[in-house]
Image (cartoon, rainbow, N blue to C red; front, top):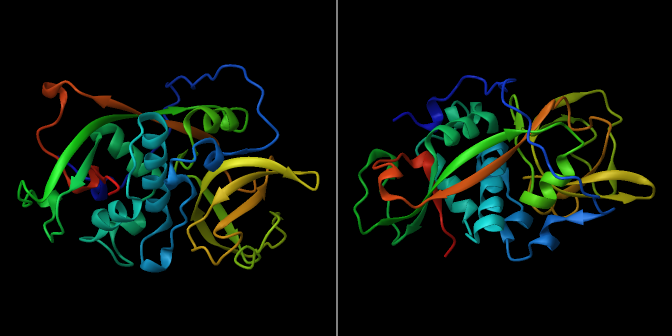
Length: 275
């Protein structure tokens, strides 16, 4: 079976896939997924890239964790999952640092994911199939489906019904970072600088209006000392997130029929249950 780090081709949107249609509904003026699902603590957790892991893996794993909790009541330890996924392949030249959310979702859609329980602390590496049975315990297996939907018009509906959004075709849910963004403290960020610094993967968890300006509420992964305790607001409707033509909704469907569950796995499929 192939694994996540070998999936290096762009995750191109298949235009033949029909866009997901959401029921007509009036969105409230303000929405915060942390308040809508207070038991799902992964939604409001801020991570810190200074540990050496790229932003895309926090947002990819974090969004799966959010949606597993919202739809299935399953709590995932995002930090442990990220650490175990990357501990054998980290560094500036690693495939994990050159991959992106789109590639991760393509891989999970092809192979599915397992939720697992860490029975005891161990240095075993499940992706090498060298873990002993008493060291990890497979919990449940989920199929992953990625459904595109029209940009902007359905983002709010998707967040309200299914949870935070952090995954966009063709590459990721990203925003282009300019030189005025790292110094952001509070309020609604609107770019003024033309000096680009790169890209950052982010997770949209809600929206609102402040001083007459509509915004998205977004979780970053620069630690809690940055911005509004790790979060920021960014102006809506002005493509402040960069060119993101087609967002998608990631759905997770549990598989309980034994013969339909894969008999093998690699570490890139494993999501660790919170203890």
